[in-house]
Image (cartoon, rainbow, N blue to C red):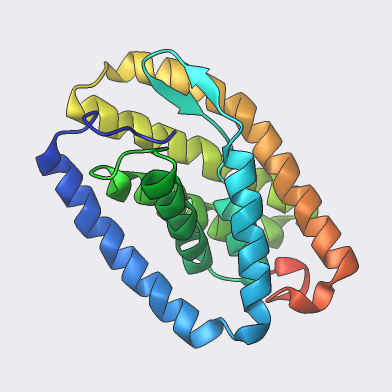
Amino acid sequence: MHIPDAFIPIGQALIYWVIALIFVALALRWARRSMGEEKVPLVAVLAAGIFAIQALNVPIPGGTSGHMVGAALAAIVLGSPYAGVFVLTLVLLVQGVIFGDGGITVMGANIINMGVIGGFIGYYGYTAVRRLISNAYAAAFIAGWASLFISAILCVVELAIAGTFPLTVGLTMMGAYHAIIGLVEGGITAIALYLIASARPDILEHPLGVGT
C-alpha cells in the first residue's frame, strides 16, 4: 500500500502533504497532552510491531503492494485516533527515509491512507461496534479489517485520480487482496488487544480499549 514516488503528480502530492501535516500537527498535540512517560515504552513497542508486520508485503499487479497496517491497534490501545496517526507517521518516516519503502514526495498520501484513515476508521469503528456487541475482541477484529480495507480503497482512488491505473482495475486488485489481508489485520488487532488486556490491562487507555 506504500505509494512510490512518481505514482502521483507533484501537484497532487503537495495537496496530500498539506492535509497530512494538519493531522500530524493534531497528533503531536495529542502526544504532548496525553502521552506521559509511562506510555513511551508502549508507543515504542507498538511502532516496532507495526514496522515488523508491514514488512510482510504481498506484491499486487500494477506496481504497488498489499500488507497489514496496524493503525487500528495503536488507536484502540492508546485510546485516540490521533495515536494511530502519530505512530504510523513515525513508522512511515523511518520506512521512507531510511529504507526507501514508500516515496518521499507522496508520503503525505501514505500518512493519510495508513495513519489518518487507518487510525480514525479503526478507533471509531471499534467504538461503534462496541456499542452494538459486548465482545471487545470481535469489535477489534471488525475495526482492524475495515481500517485496512478502506485505506486500500482510498489509495486506489488517489492513484486513479493521478492516472496511474484505471479505477476499476485498482478496485478489483487492491480491493480483493486487501479484503483477504484485512482478515489477518483484524485477527492480529484482536489477538494483540487480548494479550495486552490479559497481561497489562493497566496500560490500556480505557477498559478493554473502549472509548467514552
